[in-house]
Amino acid sequence: QIGYSKNISENLIDDFFSTIIQYLKSEKKLKLSKFGTFMVRNKKSRIGRNPLTKEQKIISDRNVVLFKPSNTSRMAPLFDAIIALPHL
Image 1 (cartoon, rainbow, N blue to C red):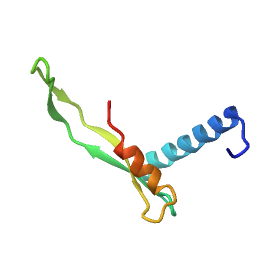
Image 2 (cartoon, rainbow, N blue to C red):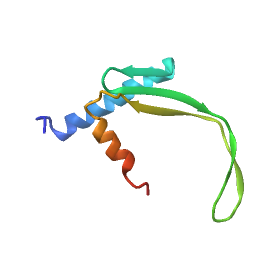
Image 3 (cartoon, rainbow, N blue to C red):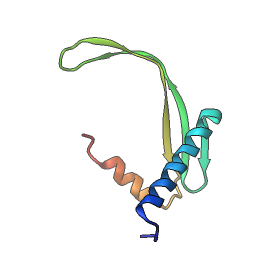
């Protein structure tokens, strides 16, 4: 609890991520000291396969955002816990 209402907290987080997105569109890399680094990487097109039907499709090339937490981040245990969650 930091004393902000849910609405203000949501707006703050939305603004934070929209600022990061705008910066990444122009610069491709953003380093936040003691937090981590956001990077944009281009993934080439490739052939994907539906595991149920075995149907092949082309997956188009696209840009993806990667995040690498800082080694000194106070949030590192949180990032480790999120990564350890089972993916549904």
